Image (cartoon, rainbow, N blue to C red; front, side, top):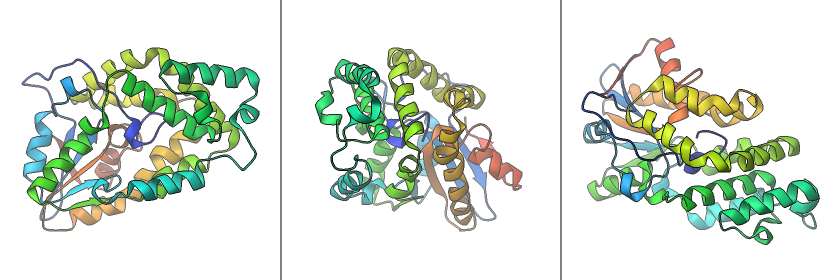
Length: 289
């Protein structure tokens, strides 16, 4: 995941190139008999700038399995929609306008309209879902496409190569941290989403530049900046999930075959990231060029 939204909304990428000497946002972790590659993902990319850094190609070719946050090959869209309807809507008879108040609702409605979303379609949704909908539409408005994201590109390769896929968590596990947020934190998250719309293009350029260059320190700073004043969001979306994933990564490190694990870039870098956690446990972690 990254930033303030679930994995498919870390749609951060624009206009930058990779020099021959630059690192890739991919790390090799050595087990006793194998290597597990950890790759930081951008979940949406523009079609004209969708080429993956070379490290991805090397890691994919050297792996027998593709592991993602959620196994997209097995994700049923109808089941996902049903789950969202059960967990992402307001109680019967409650409207978003009532939850937000007139002033805040007008601001949210204007933000939604600016990216092509009619407010009436959002009025029965919980604030955290509204934030997701607006963010996703904003990225699409800027030309980003989930079909060009890292996971989707690698998944198409895996399906063509008959390479098995797996997930670190289910959709309910992934979004559970958002459903558990208090009403106040959900509204705060929505406010933050609206505040950031005007800067989305420049932020995309900065993050993707750091991603393509494999600049872990810069990525950590850029991706975690919004959480500094919002720790109640960072814990369920990043820290808690990393802790749940770590034993699964270690299990992969105990096997004989190599594996490629692809997760949102923020899950790898910075404090509490998987790379730091694995190094503290004594694993050798090397960044690919």
